[in-house]
Length: 385
Ligand code: PHE
Image 1: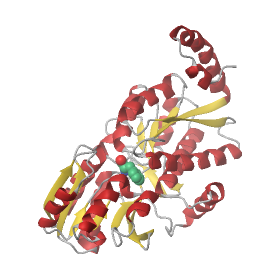
Image 2: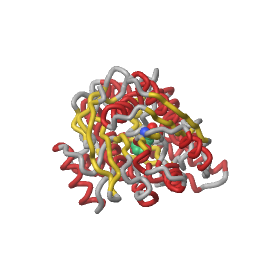
Image 3: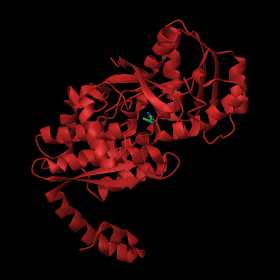
Image 4: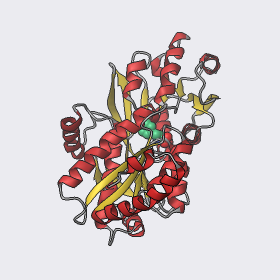
């Protein structure tokens, strides 16, 4: 029997068309005996740690679910596609997963810009999609088939502002963000709204261009504004050079506060010393004091021989939340799965106990993590409601 890979490997168009018939026959057979879920992730490219770490969590959830007999008597299969960290590929991969592979639900992405692209396709094709970690507000807005098992940036920005204003007792903040990035600029904006509402002041604000590598001029301008804290909701691969260049002009690590985009082992590898004393809001920390996360940590350690990070924990939760909805659904149609997802309540995830609200977002705890001694340490947590 032809495998999917051998179908793709054939280069001539005529052969592809002919094989397409055989391919369709195969996927029909698969669909009867297995539950096919598609997952699009950044497995290569600029944000590859996001995708690779998330996949580890999904794989663990999958292994556990199948070991327990699968769902409705069927084994679950997850087909992964690499979007190479680009939105254009994300669109294409979601199309493929639905049209070619007949996925009845989709898991992905991490970066909001790519979930926005993939979510548009899934929603138009009426296939439920669960993103483990895309926090930008607009991802789920007006899209009945798009869900998330994480909090939103409206919630995260508000918590970061509260933390800076109330816990750190600061009133003057500088903003530093990626100007055209859905996640970064959105989170900077929700932080601003909440911080100003709480009597704080944004004394300086700078948006850099995605792809910039020299941040020194921006950082000097930020420093000149005399902020007590710089809120930098950027991705880890941007934060490493930012932190290094900031140190060179005399900005201490503890000046910085960030968002969940900082979460990667590569942040510590690249800039742990430069960011000593910095805080960021996140979904999880390796030392969260939550009883319901312990079993996950142990199982993850046994399978991957390493402690899970936030992305792995979220991948695990998104997959399990979807499996839970599929098992509660009245049948295996995407429509029934969508309805079951809307009814998710008090779901015990590794990243907290979550309930899906009317906007298809998750209400759950938001953790504040401190970078200290070359590690991410749980500092405090807030409720997202
Ligand atoms: N929340 C980020 C986004 O929406 C993605 C992210 C989540 C990155 C968790 C790192 C850790 O784009």
